[in-house]
Length: 256
Image (cartoon, rainbow, N blue to C red; front, side):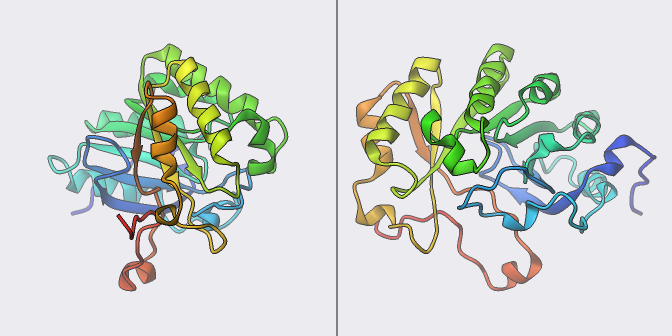
């Protein structure tokens, strides 16, 4: 019999998608992913464009998340909130608290656009995946939002000061900025104290697959060995239709 969910602030969370099981979106843990609806930035390569509109009807309710977690006790380690941009929503703190109360670890994917909100959420988090879109000089062009870079780097400082486990992630192809800027970004992250940086391939019709160029993760790693670079697919909301078509992951190395 489905678990009953009492009235809670988390019920206002606008949920655009739910992945019942992932092995890649919360490092070291088996997790579910809750995709939150809405994001104020407009990155041209966004792989979850259907989640950008905060006013779009949300296809899932919070009660579905709690019912899933009640059935997955002992099978899942945690829940990661992704998006969209989860920190856009005022219901997120209660949702995190309720997930923890059920005995699950909590993770967050964020672009760091709201440093003050992120600061308040950190006591409720076990891990943060922070998107660093690129070098500061390229931020506004990537996000199409003035001042976005300053906010993201402030969020990085907040996460580091908190002691919460984290990693930085950058989605890249040469059309966004060149390899010299990528190497400079590696230097900047290392100087800031970042020790794990996930470099994700940007898959767009105009982008050149990494296997046909000098592997950017190798270029950056050779230039800044203090940062541990790993490659990982990006979190992508899957619809039932996409699952039936067996859509390939957004990240691949077909020539590796």
